[in-house]
Length: 330
Length: 226
Image (cartoon, rainbow over all chains, first blue to last red):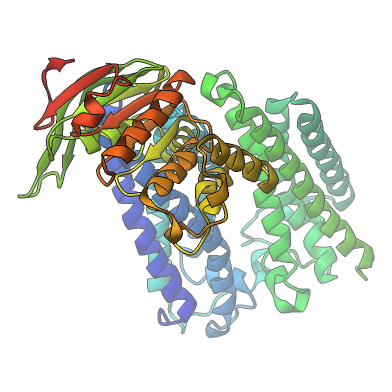
């Protein structure tokens, strides 16, 4: 089973990521403990070179980490024919106890890594390493999660047994007992749609206001997170049924398949990227008064707000278009 | 203008062939003056110039240029300082064969992002100033030693730098050409440029243009400055 090309790619990539993160963690501890920009000591100059190496390294490693989130879902989707009962990634991930935990940790890491890359980018815009301690402290919080993800993913792939009978998404994401998302069946469709469009309008509107006027950064950032949460609930509550044209089919994975035009990929990409950009605006708010960032941070935050607003609108636009052409009648 | 504090530079650190070229130099270089780093081969002149010119980093110590500390700067900031603050004259002319003298001279201006017409106009004005306008369209390989040296000066001045750094600029010039070169430097000094030269040529260190000579030996300042 592990000789499937996608699994080999993910495991090899994960080994590389874990090694690089472990090395970078050691370097980060050294930098946090010994960093003193006022000193011209040999150690300080060596640390300045090292942070250049480590941040470049992590930029590439984390870019791979972002891509591999989708590769993980694609892999789970592609290996479903090996398991009796599986119809999509939902069934494959349920084959053992590590599939879904890996997915959840990967999702958390996707968002955190995205925000860390924003911090790293901002730090590189200042001549005096303005966010060096912030970004390495954040990295040291993130690193165990990335290592955990590597371990969970390895456990998931190495314990795949083809003779296991798993459940299909119809069972896993139903209103019945045994559902992975309890209470999902009770979400009323019309109020869920109203909340979704209201939050989309508020998040996108505030994003555009921030882009134009540079005001309301924290509020917009909070709304970006709310947009993410509401969208996830909406996927179960009404987006999935409209895409599959079946009121009881609420799987978040089937939409990644060819039968549905791979519509899940642009949807999830827009939602996740928009959330990172929107949340990033708020994360950067406390650093606006740093002198060396005074010229670059404001425009960058505005750009992030615009990107987030546009991506949220793209997400809502795809959803609306799909609902408009859906043959499902409630 | 330029301040060095306890600057050291070692190569091949931790290896059997470790070599320390500069051993804790502290120095202040005044704006608008001509300073010569004088010393025998291996005394650390070129290494010191390359660190001041943001082309290499010290192993320890700090350097300030126009009040800004440069040794801690990330590379993307160093590039900008190197481009805007310094004009370089190397031992060899290092002109690219196959393209014209003017094309060679304007090369440092391309990354600035100005229009080609502006760059060309500025280049030709400098060719006029140094009396080599007729040679602007000549291929680099057709230039004489003196002409090549003037093209090199145009190239160094293309971005109107505050500091001209010249490493053994007269090493390949005969006496007359060396004197011509020092005359050019005198003109630049009158324009307010800071001149920093490394040379062991007495024609340079004893020139009337030079305000200060810093003697170097074995990577250290030897017996104060003159």
